[in-house]
Image 1 (cartoon, rainbow, N blue to C red):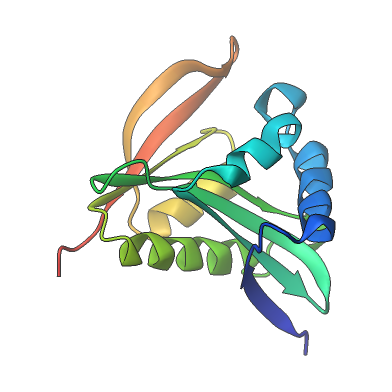
Image 2 (cartoon, rainbow, N blue to C red):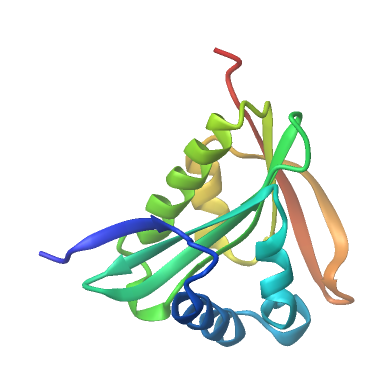
Length: 154
């Protein structure tokens, strides 16, 4: 059985940040990647990053921010190819939702390529709804669903 751990990024852990940047570059096209300004993103006060280790290896991460008390955004969710389909994306998503819940935001928003069916299905499974289709969001020929999850005020 694999040893799985979700950790909150310590901004001083350069080795982990570099691993995440490397994964970011590998998974996302250059124009969608935060790799070139990843360090700037991490310096923002209202942002967080959780990462998942499986057997002491980086398997994935989720980045989120809470610009106001009204809403939070999940800006990135990525899992290494060899770790996909094993529930790690779901584990990261649930952890990010819980972190946002502790910030007492009323809504979580995200954008996802409609062609990334496993991702869309994962978000829907956890209560996210499609708000609208944004034409040309990622590039002139790639659209995005804007999705949202309303959190209970309890």
